[in-house]
Image (tube, rainbow, N blue to C red):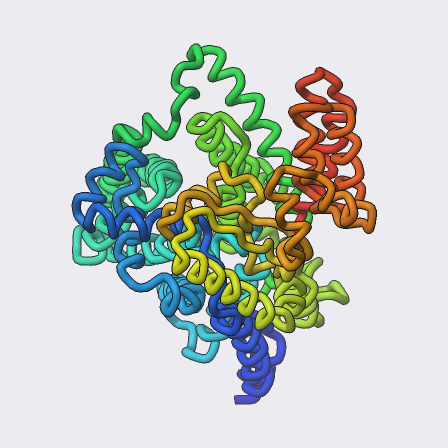
Length: 568
């Protein structure tokens, strides 16, 4: 009994004393609940434009006809479309705030299942500590938290990570049993579903299964090699279902008309740049390094995959492994759409890099010299404190703390906007004018309506509410009848007063106004907005300078914009 107490005190990752474990579970639980509560507390939040598009399309065409239309004209993500269509059958308003909490619950449940598979001897208390810790770290790590957690159309990117956990848990059980049982067939179903949720899932699963099949063949284990080959075939089938759909060809659009060799060259170049940016973002997170402090504890509780593999791997192999997954994700993004990864894809890419980092150190590489050095480090005894500090100072959590006080005001502005549209529709007006949001939370707000009635956001919003046009103007203009009339007539005068007072949005809008008629003046206003921290103005300047082949200023403003996306 005394010996067990000594082990309990020494082992910090999954064997803390009862009081400390409860405190850690409670901290991580509260951390997770705050992310869940933010979505509910801010009701009604503004859905992303694609949520409106799904709601309108399903209502117009019907559930099953829309599945066929979407596959033929939009994209081949069968499970994605089916789930989105199912969710929008619920009203966008009342059900919307609860989906972030359900998404987090799904992820935690999958992490709990994987924990039980990886370490079946782990106690219930330790498993809960592992689950809530992984979930809390993931929430702090999400690159595009607003789009992937608080907007319904972005949630499949987190659902895919949960399905990765579930598929891995089922595959490990099947490999452990070494036969084609229930776990094997359930894994096949999950792999196909995950592959048709997002095509990235099919590629990642296919590459992993292929490498496993080669490894089992090298060991002479034909049964397990056949199981891994089956997983690979299912992943390939899912990828082909998505990639060969008519909708995918339409979505890829002009990118398909580029000559093959030119497309390959551009894909490799942009993928290399995207990989570099992903690596910077990944290694910029302090939690990546704090995780290494837990390696001695992991080594005491989790078995390695292969002793021979462990002897061949060195710590530096972790960097090319991470770079490989980042490069693979960037190749998929660039090849499909011709540009760098979207925030959603970058979120998934960083999660895969983190998963590869964890599995490399946890199951493959455990040099005794490194473990001894970590144990003797003064940081080892404070590893849980350091992890808690990483969670507290992460940008997602600090943004959440900033959003909680203003969430009711944000909800009130959205209600006010909906009331305005209802009043204008009651008067028979088809050209709605609404105020721009003045309260802009960091996590809840992904995109607002724009003054440009032809923007995608405005167009989808217009169709959903049955209007002809929707124009958004700054609140001070909306509240002043005279200024509003002049602005609707196209005059820039109402914006100039706000720009002189330091309003970056007004500066950017003035840049847009002068862009077609006076390029130097437009550039000057863009410069003013960029200096005031307006990120769209920085990107606009980068594009303008690139068009003039002035690559120095173009790189400068693009880099300034990139720096604003680094989230700890």
